[in-house]
Image 1 (cartoon, rainbow, N blue to C red):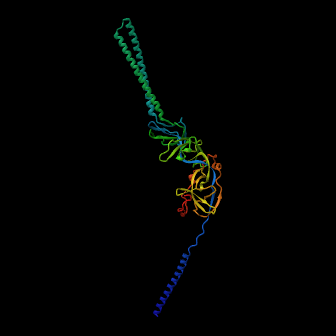
Image 2: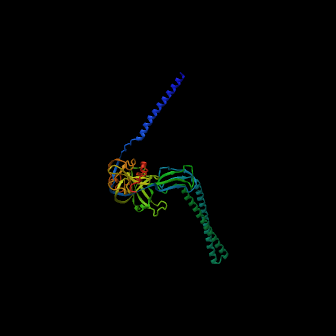
Image 3: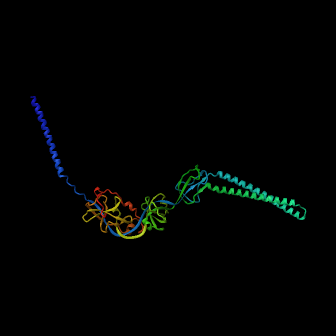
Length: 433
């Protein structure tokens, strides 16, 4: 009986093991079959993109530059003397003129010295009058002795004494005259120095900063206020060597700032450096902009567009079609079968909306303007044809400026650097290499 129980347990265990092995084997066969068959390839995804046909059209050559706005005139107010500030009638943002007093320093010590100098002058003038009276007396003595000597009533010794006294009196007069002149000079110096205690500005403008308060000690080496003239602002831009001959003094410049993106300010090239920087191979040019509404502030980041006044016919494509891949500029084209091609291009001039293509694209070829960052070479796409962005004058007017004079942004800002392209495209050479 014990044997039968033991045998039944063994038989049951063997059956359980066999059943588990059978289930595992079935699962193994199914997975092996699935691996052998392989996964079914997913259908290729067709991406919708917008394309524009490259055109032979007119393009205006513009030079896009950047710089910081600065005031044409600015000054720091400093004291020539040491003293405590007793009056500051203006603060930051106030408008001031050259006739107004911006800061007054305690001048009580200077006034006291001036009063003392004036008193010394009066004493010197009184002493001068005494010596002049003495001189006139000695002159009369000389005349009297000369008459007596001519009659034989006087002696030579008396006459010589009269001459000597007269010369001494004259010297005393000259000495007192010098003392009076010295006292007058001291008074003048103190009166002029009194002006140093009342500070004004050599230019009219606005208080840009005030570094002191009433009661502070003013010193010659410490700036008190900064005044800026905002009627005209300037910016200095760096022009690369190849564009040097395209810029001239008097040339119009269009300036935009981030604070007023819808407005364009007209400037003028005032100065161009005659030499190039040896390190950057650029030349600096100074552009002045009238600022009648005082909207432009020093320190603003300015985008400058210079019109080279050269209009030419070229193959053009929208800037939105241009990508920058591994430091090279390229565009995606779509052929008649709807397949994409990544092609390297060499660009020329740009007006902010379209760019000239010197090599890589022919007129009539379709370039992708929307969706070019989502495709890869050889991919099938659903291309929707769009129109090229207008003609030359329409492109200028679209920015709210006169034709042939309108900057339309920074072309560099429209280029896409290192777009997320499929890794398989990295090994594929660009067409045209």
